[in-house]
Image (cartoon, rainbow over all chains, first blue to last red; front, side):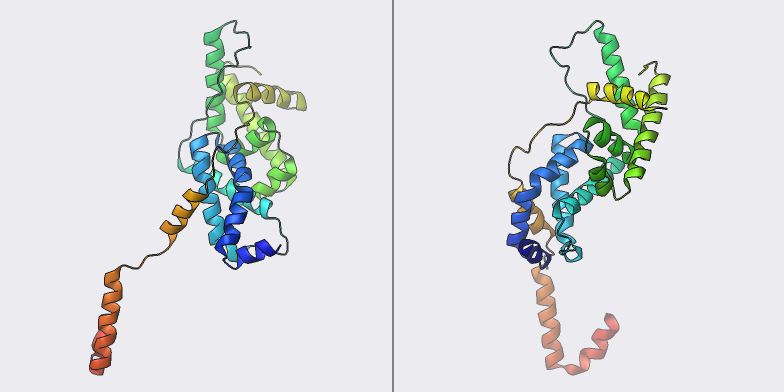
Length: 173
Length: 72
């Protein structure tokens, strides 16, 4: 708590301690949303920069620094997704997976990536965090600043849009 | 749409976009320090010189105050 109080008063050493303590957490969270390492590093810095500027508004009595940072990081990541047409990066083909028809597999992967890329940033973040990363709904809700039920609604809407998009391209779940 | 359909989409997504397991490779603090330095407002030396000159002028010739205020 003392560290947070010092940070809120503008102590740079306290900020450095918090930065070193939470940089991995913020990087991992942002990376789960934007799925690009270089962007995630840049957005991690932007998150801490916003945190530093907003230090006077931090509620030290609550002491939930991780939650606060996750919230800022989510806003930073969503701003990034809104500002640029960001392509969803695909994973490499796992070497042990059988490939009956490589072209068909590749087309299906592209279709899914395109469909995810077409989701609005708010829906995309909810879908990726809930279904791919399997983060607890409570954490997602806190990070997005909405209720758990609202997260479920966003995931539901995201899945419905994905199904429609995939059906249009002939991919059936 | 039911839970089974959500699970089907979830399966497809996880196949194409597996969960991220990458860790931060290095310490970002040096980059943060550079960012903080860039964010600090720097006042150029000529602004200080102008302020000093104006202050000296006011001290020596108080009558210029209305003229200075007019030009603000």
